[in-house]
Length: 276
View 1 (cartoon, rainbow, N blue to C red):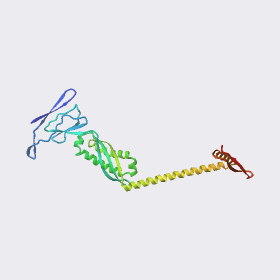
View 2 (cartoon, rainbow, N blue to C red):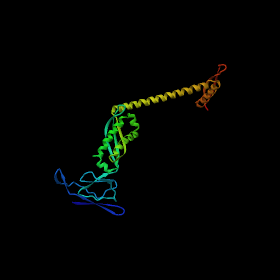
View 3 (cartoon, helix red, strand yellow):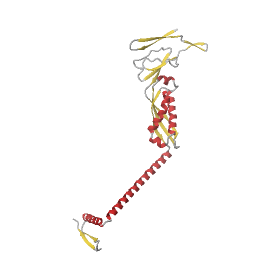
View 4 (cartoon, helix red, strand yellow):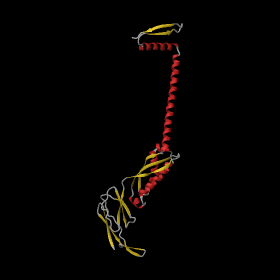
């Protein structure tokens, strides 16, 4: 028989727990053989690291996040510490080809922000939490993007990213993981699709410019018609003639002769304009 002591510090006193282990030998299928597992003993942990203590490499009876002032003592024969990083991790999701709702083939690159909130579940609840998250993110990305049109994916990237995160987060929570964000980095099209979209955008801008020019012509015609209605009166025509004579006198270079018809008799009056 061998004994092991585990000491944990408290505010008032130290509590010493005595555990008794039957033997270093295990009986497997009637055969008695010694078992010496490979152990790693870590005396201190950082604040951004969690750990679980397991016996003979098997699932531990507990897991806790360790602080600088809360360091457990372990039995180096039967127990070992598994270090778990609980800081935010940034994982790139591999590029994948997706067909959108409007039957357009695109390639999407995205990135996943996540961190471990439960070291116990992350270490013993899933075989490989990193691989599981990436595969789940890829599947969710394909499903969500396939249910939206290309225009929607381009214009509403933030909404698409939030929709993907809402799908991944409940499942990852069972793995002891919190998904902070799933962001779409880049959307790539084929060269033919790029030319088609460019031509469509050019045609749209050209059509909009023609509509604007047509509206301007209509407004100009309305203004000309209003001006003609105003100038149709005799008094307005006389004012217009006087404005014309004044303009000519200002811009005249040397003497000029102008023939002005009289409205009443139709006779012509000769006027000589001299430049000032």
